[in-house]
Length: 472
Image 1 (cartoon, rainbow, N blue to C red):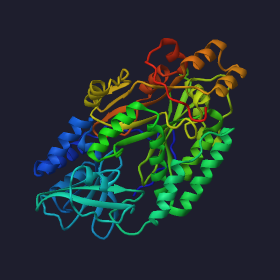
Image 2 (image 1 turned 30 degrees about the vertical axis):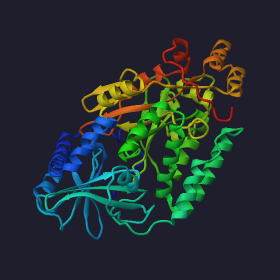
Image 3 (image 1 turned 120 degrees about the vertical axis):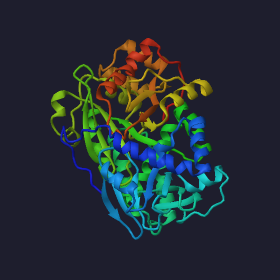
Image 4 (image 1 turned 90 degrees about the horizontal axis):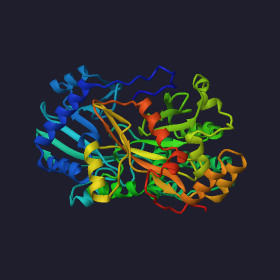
């Protein structure tokens, strides 16, 4: 398994990988052409949830001496690690499944493992009575769903901070449950953001000690998705559809957090405590005035996209670790934090980005739930991105008063936020092709500007959805 490294400005340059993508598609198509249940399930994913089977593949297993394995190596897969049964390979140039070589597989056989949040839930909602290998809450467990002897096999698996295929060991289930509950029910509204960070830091310290860093990371972000989802109608609608198919949020791509300048260093430190490391940085331009640090966990593959108001000069330094001083002017990200709180505390995530069939999801959400999608801010063959309409949240009076007293907003803006609230969160519809792992910097800049609370409130661009702000 490769370790990610602290980035330079130019270290991460992601490009489409069409040869590798073609290999995955051919292997997957071969498998499901031989497996009627898997083929029908792939159609259901598309028709009922706007999802694609290819985005949920965890592992593809083939014989190590097969032509299929040789073709994969030629397309960019390299050895990663071995266990008692498998020799595994990973593709470091893009987002692709793990490739496993196994001597017990027939030469032309293809085995596909689909990632889900909970194997037992998947089996229950799909009326499948098959054995689950691995105890409940084990770091890795799986179930074989369909097999065509010597031709293909389809299974589902869940991971909690473990690579490889060992279904034994792991923390005690009671420790896992208590850690998850501590994240799920943590206090988020404090008198100061510094106090909020001290509280969550302490919870993470305890969690890491009890269940290990990687499992703690997995459970922390599962709780974060729960908190974000309860305040976002698009998320609730889509999660219900995916739950009916048994996949949960297994198709999450990245979690986006907004931070004030003065607490950005604390946000990065929190993620590093959970095992995430820095990837590429972004800067949207002087006119936009914001930047971001992308971070990734090398085991769970959790990705965070961390936004902050930033100058071009600060981009050249290590702003993620050196820290940033408070500004006398708030750009879009800083104002959002001023109105709603830090994303790591009261506000919760700004958005979750999932991988979907872009057009299918957009059309189904509008048709079935009257949930509109904003104009795409990326529309490339290998990357498509768009926000659902924003959820408008009530704003606490104490936050409006502080911003007004510091002259960071005008009286007219203050009254507007009191009366109309401000956009809080979105679900992001993303489609990745050719394994492209990067982001569209220009497009992200445009959508950040389009979601500025001052602009949205003035234009009345979205219909109001009222949510009671926690702690108000």
